[in-house]
Length: 122
Image (cartoon, rainbow, N blue to C red; front, side):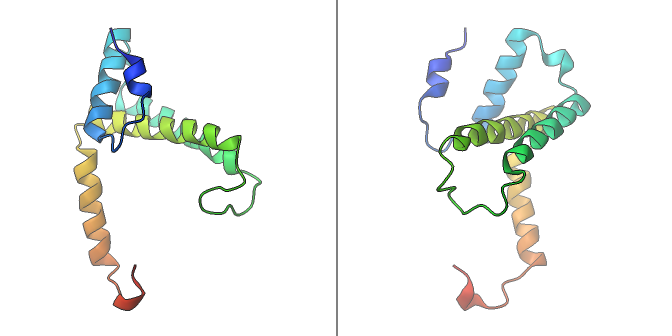
């Protein structure tokens, strides 16, 4: 039996590997693996991105840190989590190491977009 109280504790720096493991177990014990094809997970991810977009719809520009978002922050946290979890599952069923792929992409972007003025970088 899974211990979800353990999941709800504040944990610093949760790894993608930990999320992957917990998601795989969550799906396995419910018999959902059969539904978690790359296509189905991608469509679910797109749906969650749509729900995330709705939170920002019609709000105009929003300040960093969302200082005036008391009640919407929890909803935003939930939708961002849904997007992340589907993304982790999609990478897993595709046999990809999402963390390594992200680090590689950052390096590629650094080569593609070099710092032009080193003094302005923080």
